[in-house]
Structure formats: C-alpha cells, structure tokens
Amino acid sequence: MSTSALCLVCVSLLFGTSLSCLQCFIDISVRNRLCWGHVLTEHNVRYVDGCFKKLDRLFDRNERVIEAGRVGRGYNKQLKEIMEAEILPMAKEFNQKRNKDTLYEERLQTAADNFIAAASKLPRVSGCFPPCGFQSAGAVYNCIICRYDSCEFPLDCPFEEINVTENSRSQIWCEVPFPLPGDIEVIWSVAERVKTQLVDHFKEVTAGVDRLYSIPSTSLQHQGTYKCEIYSGQRSIVRLYYYLTVTPQVVEGHAELQDIFDLSLLSKGPILPEPVGSPPSLLPSPLLLTTCLTSLLLLLFLSLGALYWLTMPE
Amino acid sequence: MLQLLHFAVLWLYLLLPSMLCGNLFCYFSHILEVEKPYELIVTECPPNTLCFKADGRYANKSSLSARGCMAKEDCSQVHTINLYGIVHTMSYGCCDSPYCNSCPGVTANSLCITVTLTTVAVMTGSW
Image 1 (cartoon, rainbow over the protein chains, first blue to last red):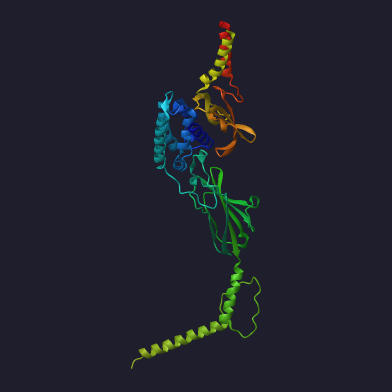
Image 2 (cartoon, each protein chain N blue to C red):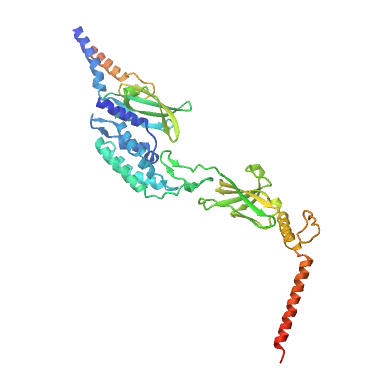
C-alpha cells in the first residue's frame, strides 16, 4: 500500500515537470551521470527516475530557486557558473557509484540552498516602466523558459499633446522613462496636419543622436504629428508620438486690440470691426498721446518755476 | 517422466518471469524533445510499477519522449506538460518485461518468453 502510494507521488511529480535553472544550465548527460547510482533505500533498487524527481522538486519546481534566478541582463552566465559549481563535482563523484536516496536528498538540498544564496546576490533590475518600449534592461532571466523575459509593452507610445503659439519656438524632447542602451539612433518623422500613428503618413526629417526636435519659429504648417523613433542596433525599441497644435497669433492679436479699445480709446463714435488679418496697432490713440505730452510739459514748466524760485537771490 | 517434464516446464514458466522481473529493469530517459539525442540508462523499478515510454505531442506531431518506471494505474492517463512555454500532450505506453521500453510500441514481455522457451528447448534437448 505504502509502495503504491509512493509510486503515485513519484508519478504525480513527474507529471508536474517543468524547466528550471538546473535544466537551463546543466546538460542532460551530466544529470544522467549525477543520477546513475540513486538507490531507493526502501526497496534497494537503483531507481534513476527517483533522482530526477528529486531534481524536479528541489530545483525545477522550487520557487526559491526560480526567484533567485531572476537576474538582470547579462548575469545568466554567472548563474550558469554557480549552478555548475554545485552540480558538476557531485555528478563526477556520484557517477557509476550507488548511493542511498537519503544522501542524494541531503546533498541536492545543500546544492539548491547554495545556489539560492549565491544567485540572490547577483544584480537585479528595477523592473519595467510602462506603458511602452522594448525595455531590455528591464527584463529578468526566467528559469522556466530558459531565457530573458520581455517587459511585453508595445513599441508605440500614446500621443502627447503639445500646444504652441504661432511664431514662437517649439521644442520637442524625445524622453523615455527607462534607461536606453548606448548605441541609439533617433529618427524624427512628421505627419503634417494629421494626428496619426500610421507609418505611411510620416516623412523622415532627421536621423542621428539628437533627442531634441526644435522649430525656431512655429508656423501653422508645422501643426501635425511628430514621431521620435529610437533604434538600437538596427532594431526599433520605442516610438513616441507628439501632436503639435499651433494657435494662430492673429487670434491673440485680436484679443489684445479689444482690450486697448476698451481701456484707452473710449471714443463715442462707432467702432468698426477690424478686418481679419490686419496687423494689430501698436501705437496708442492720438488723444492719449496729446494728453500725456501736455501733462509732461506742464510738469516740466512747474518744475522749472519751482527751481527758479528756490535759486533766486534775495 | 513426461509428467515430471511438464511440471518442470510449467514451474519454469511461472517462476522465471518473477525471477527475472521481480525488480523490473527498464530504460530511463528524461523528458526531452524528440529531435535531441538521448542516452538510455538503465533504471530498476520499485514493486508494482511498469516500464513506460511516453509520447508527447504538439501540433499533431510527436514532440517529446521519455522513458522510465510508472505505476500501472497511471499508464492510461493523458495530461499536458509545459516545456519552454509550449504545452505538449503526453500519453504513455507501459510494458511489464525487462527493457521493454526501448522502442515505441513494444509491449510484449518478449525477453521472459524467449528465456523460458530457450530453457525448455535446452532441457528437452538434453533429456
């Protein structure tokens, strides 16, 4: 009864098999050598399957091992070295020699604990920064699939709105919240007058390393979508979209002109509407100018009179 | 005398399998993609288990293979397994004679039969 129960447990363990750090880094021939002499003490049989089930339990389905294996990009080599340092000597020692399952259990458990302790010290990464971009530095090693995870964000970022006034300077910064590799190329493209992410609407305008796109004097023709696409080693890693809205200056000129009329003109005659597009008057009204000049002259004469009086001899 | 011979043959026939298969020897190979080279090593099954050969299928094609020992009642089951993020369907074929799981579809306890028949032939010949 106990035997069949044991077998049932063993088989159920076999069914739950998945890959992990051990299977990623240790070749099957090494695992075969390691497990060759695994003796099931209860029945005194050289039961190789049982050893693989132990590996499965202690490494492959051990959450702590998988978690310790979540290292940053480039550190999988060190992970392999740590695992090999634990397993290879044991495989050499155990090959073609019969050893009790209890010894296997003890030694493999120690190996797993040592791996966890050493691998946990390897650098991790801060993670992924949503919502877009291929973030290679954000990826961590995944011992279940034996490769690095991706952050799984789309390359296209959502639109960012930018509002500028006509004739003013526009500056668009291609900023991403995640660290970029050193070898980037930035390509700026424009889709004039439309808000779109469709590739065929864009015309390339600049290519290089400059992440700032600047328009010294923005005109109405500049309105549209500006795309900044960053490449690393010929591969696109992120696409940012900025929709530039240009407010015509004439609208602002009209508002200012109205204020001047209200404050200073105060003429009783009918105010004719200004034709659209006429340049706004920068000079104040003649009446206001006359008043100001008269006041200034009066002040000058009064000052001169006062000065003359004070300096006049007795 | 002929009766004695019959008894001996019967006795051998009944006893030999248990002598040979008391601790059943099977081939073992861990779950591996079919295209990868595998190395067969010998494993000794605990009582009440049989040799098995597993066939994993993905996209209607044979994708994985495995060998070893398993409990008789588990031989008929079919389940899925996730390997490198790919889900394969595993089914098993069991057999109860030594090393019977080297090739797919070998289920007869051919070695036991062969050994028995050889013994009988030798005994008959020497008689």
